[in-house]
Length: 512
Image (cartoon, rainbow, N blue to C red; front, side, top):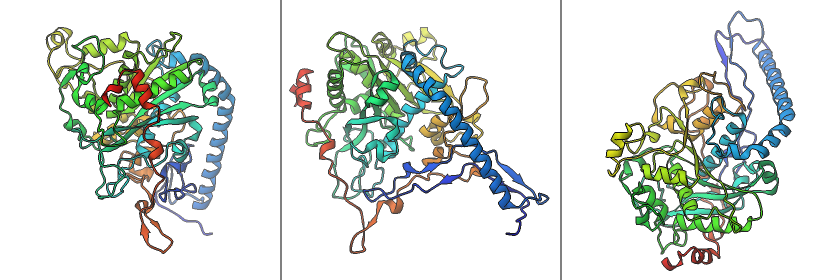
């Protein structure tokens, strides 16, 4: 083949491998199963004076890529057993036992990998959620509970979903909830907002404990839900959550989303709170003879629900086993807003809940609500403003990241990109501490950033908003017509048969 001379051609990173792009059993493609090469090859510029042919340089880059992959595999093999030993030995420190002192700057490699792992579990809520208003399943999970992680290409995480969480869409958060435009739908009043998962035996041995994880869905692109907030605090006890302090308050919209229900709907006839508490009670009882942890994660509005549910679980004592052992409860949140007042913060700390908040300094959501009265205001002034309905305080420990430190991302102030969860995971992978150079530690594919935003620099040739269903989920029927396929019935994914039994033991059955 004749040599091709280019005046200035850039060979971009990354290389996309679309071989795994197959139709989903439900008739839709599963873009989460797309695989990407993770080895980084520096862009190479070719000029007309180069004597090498274009094809020979492609071959050279292929050799370099293979060499890098071999080196990465060698490093991985040599450290895997050591990392697993350390993870099982130090999980309490990584879970926040000492408030992550000495683990954030410089960044502890195991903590980084754990944060990314739980962040991916939160991201799964977006990847599995049906956002399409032209789907009659809009607002539901695209996959069944039993096939959840496998359908997302996440079986290696080693968890199984024990139950789905639903909420009623009848509250004032229209930009959070999604509804179908079709008259025949799976549910008119419910939205899927997360799941509870439990580590399997193999993962439990690696982690050093049986991990019960809760992942809450947030908002993937639009930030209008912030405008929807009534932005005033109200007592937690006003929504019948037991609390010894009547001055302990949280944002009213978060509280309503967590506690409201619609008894006419089989999916949200129980509130998200009732679903979470009964499942925590069941799982802690089931695994009471094992070492346990409860890890709650969420992004954006899901972060607020993570913190609120962590408070509720510990306030009601569901993290205490029958023999009196306390199960550590931690929240690993991403791009989360403020949730409550200073009394809420103090009570959460006294209950032993550990919270690590990962934020992008350019993101507006962590600065809301409480724009004027917050933890940055002088303590004396905050004391005076304590009784105001818009005086908020962040909880826990904050890990600040900056997207302008990544050479892969556009140095813009785009609010959607700055808030994006995949961008946060990318920043985590490259963060080694304040003042350290940005270097991807695991080689996590930067192309993932553009799944639901336009944040990668253009010369990487990754299209924005690239994650979508093939043919928008339409499939050809046997007679050759294009139709929306039926999905497996959701009956097994709403509420377990013993939920009323657990509600009765919790003293909540009188509401039904």
